[in-house]
Amino acid sequence: MRNVIILESVQERIDELQYYLLHELKLSEEFTFKRIHRMRELVATLSLPVDYAPCRFRRWRELGYRCVMFDRSWVFAYEVLPEGVIIRDMQHAKALADC
Image (cartoon, rainbow, N blue to C red; front, side):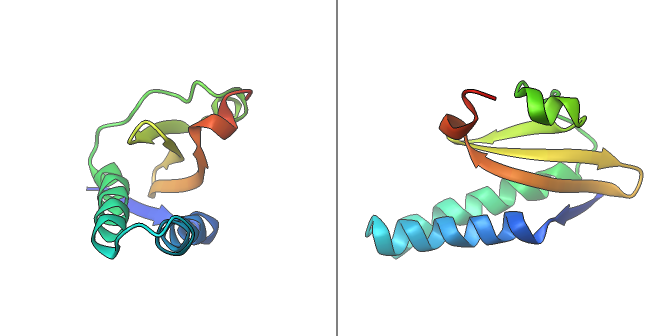
């Protein structure tokens, strides 16, 4: 098992997404918490010694990041180091379409 480190900026984006789903879109607490929980579970699976492909988005690929997609809408960029995995960024896939 590898260590998984989530940068504070990524953690803040997840928290902002939770707030947005609850307060802006007015989705149910149950739906929102399940979705955020599944997102956190996906990030936790990066502790396993299986890696996803290098990112198809140029700016992340040039940095040597790998990408994992959540529900075909959110993309997590991560870097594999000897110390473990660092989750470097999280973006909505539509925002990355031109990258």
